[in-house]
Length: 112
Image 1 (cartoon, rainbow, N blue to C red):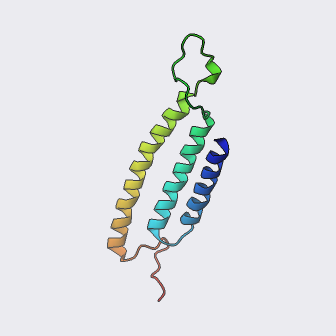
Image 2: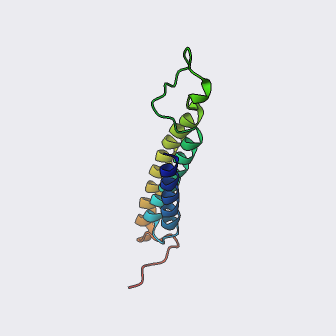
């Protein structure tokens, strides 16, 4: 399971960086979102990937077999903040496109 998680984090990070380096604003926003999702998966993976185990400490349960709830809370907070910043970026994108007439990051028009 850790190998699949590592590959998913690597692919999402690579795609996010590639999209951030693109010239259009929408691609940059999608790249930032992918990069934030990759960071969320990384933080979630740091907490330990445990399956079919209760999150509550009971009788006879060793505390080392429980998953850590702090990274899960951090990821939930990061998801909410990520949605808010993506919405803000989209509003700024629409305003910038309305004012300038294009959506390039550097402000140049497309070559035809």
